[in-house]
Length: 144
View 1: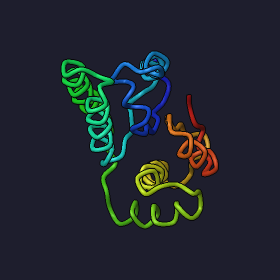
View 2: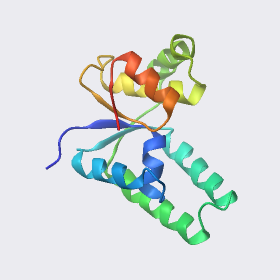
View 3: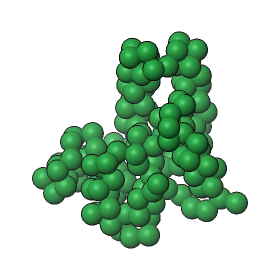
View 4: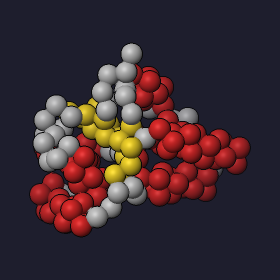
């Protein structure tokens, strides 16, 4: 049975598409969740990760194509938060507040906009340590 919606960062979505150490636990979590909520820029980050993995020889051409297909399938079912002034304006404040980089600030801002800046009790799925810490400080329940 599906539980609730959660905001998924690209660092948690890449292992759903490529075989990595975190893949199995994240796939179990994804099956338990309701619809994925993701930021508009997430597919760009994910494609960048796929390209890096392929360049570094961590995935084969066949695995790269399979990852692209999995991403396309995932995107058909997720809710995508669009860019806008509100996301950008909030993201501008987050590097100073939490010591995170620009793209992480955009992810966190999108997550905060999704929950109307009331993150208490909201799930944020993330594999990146600094972004996890920032999301927790902002008030999200961060998993895994």
